[in-house]
Length: 378
Image 1 (tube, helix red, strand yellow):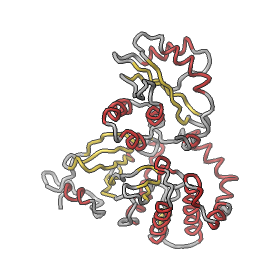
Image 2 (cartoon, one colour; image 1 turned 90 degrees about the vertical axis):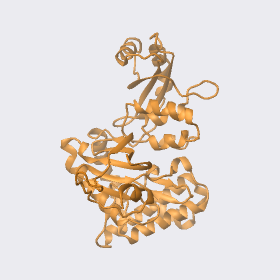
Image 3 (spheres, rainbow, N blue to C red; image 1 turned 45 degrees about the vertical axis):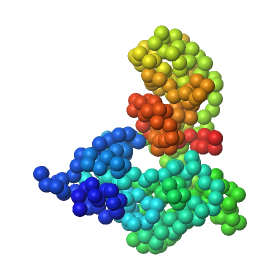
Image 4 (cartoon, helix red, strand yellow; image 1 turned 135 degrees about the vertical axis):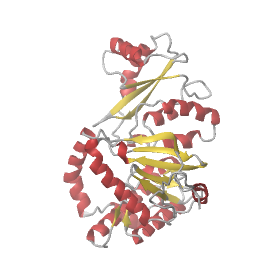
């Protein structure tokens, strides 16, 4: 079976070691990247397709792109992900691993809507998510990162899906560690239910929410402080603390300063998670004929006395609502590098999708950290 027929059949049985005989029909075709979804110290994650199967979306995680100092950890995480994806092979709702190579891995794109956008209100999705956790548990897998709603999907048929297995663990023994991790996975699923459908919580689930495992309590009291110091200080991660009022306080002066440039016709602001605590300000400067970013930064430096935009991106045109105001929902997702959510948001509007894609292609933030206080919005 060739690459094209294998991909289109969507069978989770693709060889994990590619055959690269020059001139052979089995030679791996070229991967075409269409979007960079994420870039951090552990890998680059691209969405694209193989040139002989352009209708099949593929995710490419490039671990070799990690800087030298983080490569050992990056490859450890990649090997964990590969082992976990092999273990969940065939479980509905889990990603399909296609292959690995010297640079990383390929898997099929998981088509679905992130949980915090879909916000299911009926019991079916949560029941199916529990079914999915049970199936993973039977395979000896704990996910360990499903506290993030963006790692849960509502699939097109309404069932549950889960992605991002970098922190997943394949347990050879079903001992105490396995039981604790499985319990925490279950507990985090119930927390998602509490966030998006609290009316569905059962008395038993409320009791589980009130009862953390002992390692979890110890982690909160000790390990999380060290984790935050490392991830926010060294890796420039943030868990997305509150947005504060930077747009209200600094926005007017930033907009006025950037509009001083004759090429700038409008300015829109968005927030994104900033390294360590707090949020950054992201300015989109509309300049149909183009403008130099250094000139905009100089204007801001001269006319904004306190604060200022942390990132300034010139764009040919801003996405707009029918009344002409900038689409803050689209710009916010671009600023926070939420490309999956962006695709969902503009899927039914080809013209808006084209504008969003043009801006996203030049975006300046490639981390995938979220601002949790914004998830409850409309």
